[in-house]
Length: 277
Image 1 (cartoon, rainbow, N blue to C red):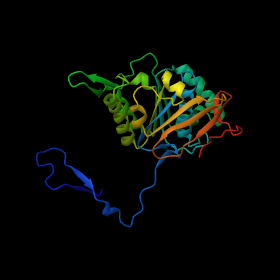
Image 2 (image 1 turned 120 degrees about the vertical axis):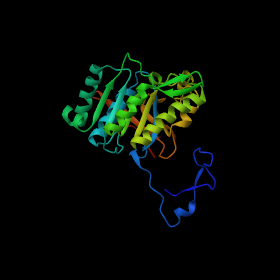
Image 3 (image 1 turned 45 degrees about the vertical axis):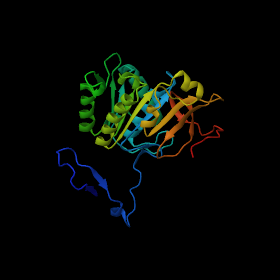
């Protein structure tokens, strides 16, 4: 809409070179941001949640998917209601079941309620979960058959939040290669746009990322290509926090968390100087 084809474009049969003329915006209000998770994760984007192994990223993502299915808030953030799929590459069905039982207790819901709301869990531990492969003829990454199957499933089921746990299990390229990382994130961004939803990947930080407090690992392209990145970690006072390390559109800050009956909840009593802005 409002795209003006360049004169003489596509004469050779290639894709036309198109521009947007700002005059079409005259006297109109720009569209508001369409949040999947209010002030944190935007619709049609790829986000990342990084954190050490065992700190609770998988649980946090399963809680988010459950909140999406039920239309409940997550750690105090409003979440748009919609079907959610968690691709669990490191957990088997029994672990997902145990975790879900604790989540349901916190949300005061039944398995039937969360299932009928659209929560879908896909245990893939011990399987080949690569979403991309290296085309050695052109030295570029291509989507695998599994990625295409995941794409079709998300479109057919109307998935609005896809959590991929983890990037390590689904990315077979060189994590320090900027072009490869960009291709991987771009493929996921294409899926997020197609379903008009959100794709979140989890990732482990490097030793340097942990020591610096940034939570980064590999090429800086990982941080640059996602639209938002949060870091689940313990701060210097041993307070567990979910901290925004990068956001293109939302607010910055950190949420203090505490463990309660097997799930994470917002620690409203924490005396924390970097609470969400």
